[in-house]
Length: 162
Image 1 (cartoon, one colour):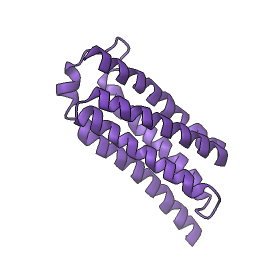
Image 2 (image 1 turned 120 degrees about the vertical axis):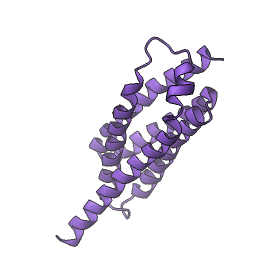
Image 3 (image 1 turned 90 degrees about the horizontal axis):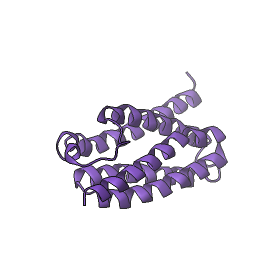
Image 4 (image 1 turned 30 degrees about the vertical axis):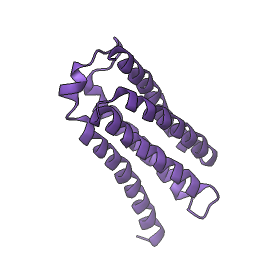
């Protein structure tokens, strides 16, 4: 295998591992709170069952990883790639911080503040990734749709439980 192919495989694996690792960190704060604190909250009628969250997030993190790989594959020396990846990492950190705030700290209002910042960071990522690759931008659309839904849900969980 030539060096370029090996580098591509390495970038792809790092992208997947980084995104799934973020999901694992978030789940450390999420999983213990679901059967206890989260199950005790008043929820809106459209709140999805708990069983949806794991598969949805695994899929979204995989799509994020592929999008990040597509951008990274262009090369760090290409204009905008470093900036795009920095914004991507910021939104990934905010994603984890939402789990910490909402589930770890059991704070719907704290989660709401983080998820609004997360949504803005995802939008910025979608825009910058789309400018580099339409496919990379489109891969993030399910993510921003889900986080938009989660923002509404987070807001209503806060309002119903204050």
